[in-house]
Image 1 (cartoon, rainbow, N blue to C red):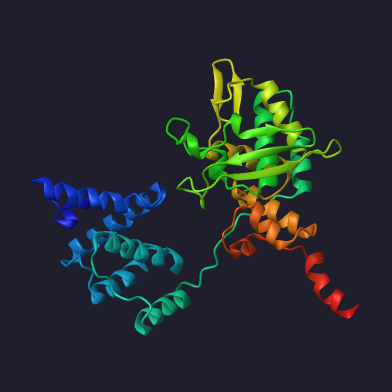
Image 2 (cartoon, rainbow, N blue to C red; image 1 turned 180 degrees about the horizontal axis):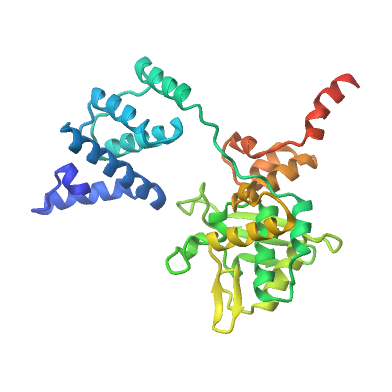
Length: 331
């Protein structure tokens, strides 16, 4: 489909060079971004085909009509913008002009749609040490499956980790380099060190992220104890993924959806509204708890591998934390 839209029909050495140059530009994007753009491109082409409109280069009036069309199918302006920016990225890759969406009539269009949709995005609720302690009461850590699930919760919480660094979407098809292997965890006397070579902000092997996690014999969320229990219950090779468990048929991989289902089942038993939590609750919960304990914002940002101050939207302050604002002002 890409070659069809670009008109890059391979018929000679020069055409192959053009195709390869385009592929090089495309490879600058993460695989997940490429997949998203495929969806954005397919949706736009179906829209233009249905209404008999021209596709590329994208015409300003066609784009306005497309934005209004997307309003009928999405609940938030951010989703509509993602589809527009996907088209913009595609046009940039192909060297094609694209309308300037920062001009007033586009800004007014987006603002009008935002007022019409009035959508508040739902964010996963953060896990807390109290919730984790309650979950632990349901587990038997001598069972390999429980030991691995608990290690996911402990490390995910203390690392402020993105679920994509811990677990694959599918147990059949995944990129091993993007996930934690057993050889990526180093055990010391008073800590463990987790090494990440790929994250959302590290995609070109430009650096390695090393995160030390302090151990504590008195804490039920001690990362060292959780990891050692996992590997003792489910022995494996250093090259094996970290979050696997031993079954009668060998080591089994835990996927993101499987973990989320297990987490929610525990929360449902404990009486929480399990629908409010997901794998992202680990990252939000860890960052929120660290901040509430007085960890400086810059350390929270560095520990969670945030490039910008977007980590602030991950924090959820308790009523007591909020009360401290005026309490300190009045003291």
